[in-house]
Length: 213
Ligand code: AMP
Image 1 (cartoon, rainbow, N blue to C red):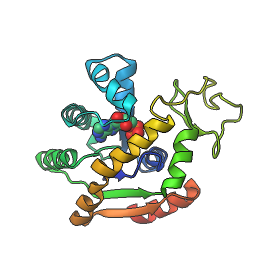
Image 2: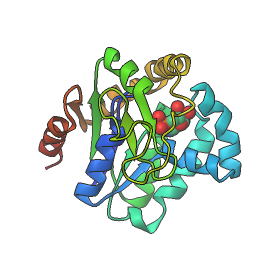
Image 3: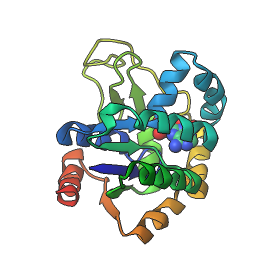
Image 4: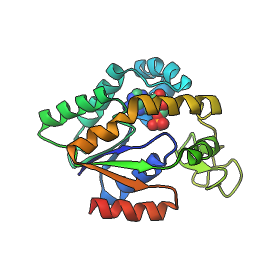
């Protein structure tokens, strides 16, 4: 199965994608995570991407498409994959179509994770991440057992540099302008499925399973 996950920043795409990846045994590829890895490792991609990410801008398509194509070309993607945070522009979606054609594959489903804007601010401003193991928490809705400390590995939790209020506003504008048109793009292909992620993650997963099964 090959899936793309759409939705605004803070819609909970990452959490849902992680669960789908585990439950369906397919690779979860988050372009945001790939960029953060490259930044930590100080690779040429990371050095190039950092300033765009810190401002809440999209990393240019040329860099992003090349990084994604390299990742999807690895053997673990042959059984299927789930793209979280990619595509984010029509140009990326068209490049993905070409890649799929060249490989004789197709995207089966575009899952659109829907939440009202009022939820988004709270989710992003409250988000804390573990720099060591990648676990995600929310100080309002999903706090760690001990404040500021990762339940899984004991590291001190941090706020992502692009989760400040000003940057969040900018990321939402970027979403409206560049990424939202992808809803129509995949609707026109007949593969768009909406899931409502206002409630508990279990409720959302029940909807996701209906769609995927
Ligand atoms: P995310 O973790 O998905 O919220 O992504 C964090 C940041 O990484 C975004 O705000 C962008 O700066 C960058 N990024 C991630 N995916 C893409 C993409 N497909 N195209 C361009 N920039 C991206």
